[in-house]
Image 1: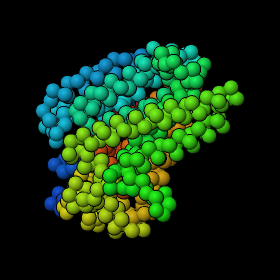
Image 2: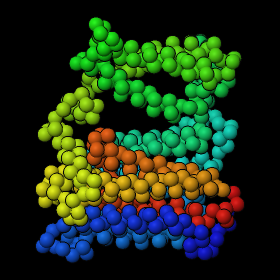
Image 3: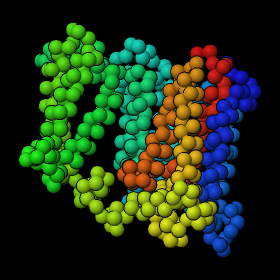
Length: 467
């Protein structure tokens, strides 16, 4: 790889500009929501807004350091960086629990969350590995290693437990799908021991599209939890109602019929006659899977089951277990079209404490309350521009390493953006993940900034990459 000696090279200024704008908007929102009349100075480090200024300064300094480093360093030292963050994830499991989770490493009176930096390490090693193998000639070993790179930190994060970051790590699966990682080698190995000739393909459609199919299965599992509830009946037409549990199988039956005709339309002529066999077997497997999901759901601990029921709308408790989401939705809605004005948020201010964690996980609420629909339209537009810009940057890379890393960054930001805002408007469960560059917090601010500046560095030297 030949590097351009210019400091800035061909840096992507639109992406850098929107990053700076989001930093400033986030800081102004933290200052507004946590404002203390006795400490009006924004540089007062005893206050959260003062600490946020410090974290932004540290993040920009680290970003500058990252930008000064030869971009080839990230490729060469991908494995040591990954092993370092994995080590931190193991060490943190032996630390004292904070709010029921062992997710923090204390440094004096402060602390960091290794899980935030694990995203960077995983993105770097995944890019390194996928760019070093021939994905046109995949085998079982290649696919297993690519998935193990993702699953190892996920397992350690789940042990903390940190459900939010665990969910975010599933974003890397879409990166695998984008790069054409197929599960054919694994699936074909399994099919060889199944004596059903109708399932034996030279190239399995299931393996190639395993990732989207996986998310369809998750969707089916969630949907069947809804329709299998004992208090729900499906009314097909007047006088005919199906109880929830049997309605689940009816739903799967209809879904498999639709899938059958879909498969007939996309399969080759040679495989069309196998579509019926696959649909029947699919129905049996889906029924078994959803039955297991429902059985597992019934065996969950009380608070876990209640949280899922609240998210799915199977139970209402606006002043109890669902208080956070209820108050968050009220704060967002109270902003109206143009908002109440800067520093005039009443429902979501720290002083009233109607919305817990309004400067971190629910920072979208005070912003929406102050600036209303028009303000949130601008904020959403900025995030969409950032994510789409990163996708554009990914597609113009000459290096597969740069492309994989860029897509990993785009998917991580997309997950954080959609889930965080979704929590505030009752579209997503409350799993506690920050809004990138916006929420108060040192670990997330530093990790997102480092992630962004690595991308800017890689992109700035894309014209000089020879391999």
